[in-house]
Image (cartoon, rainbow, N blue to C red; front, side, top):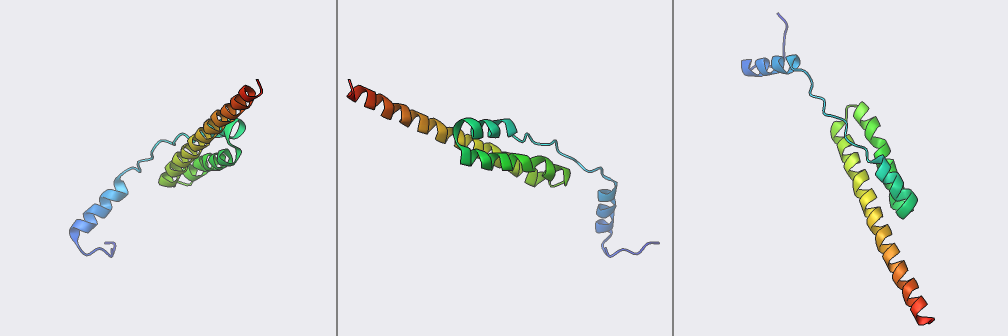
Length: 107
């Protein structure tokens, strides 16, 4: 009989059940790369670059079986891309207000 470090029979049974259970592999999260690239090209370069880096980490973390870290990187990529889009939108609105006011003053 094999020796185990577990002294309690309940622990032995639980350990045997863990060995027999198949590993639950979650689906790979969406890396949000398209959103990150659009943010980089169209709206806000610095925040878009952060989003692209985070999106790029998703597949490598997933393949390394770091599922929670892959999900966090996917969420971070989406967060930074949306922040970049919002900053770009606010900048564009302010730009058009200033240009519009300047044009009205020149009339």
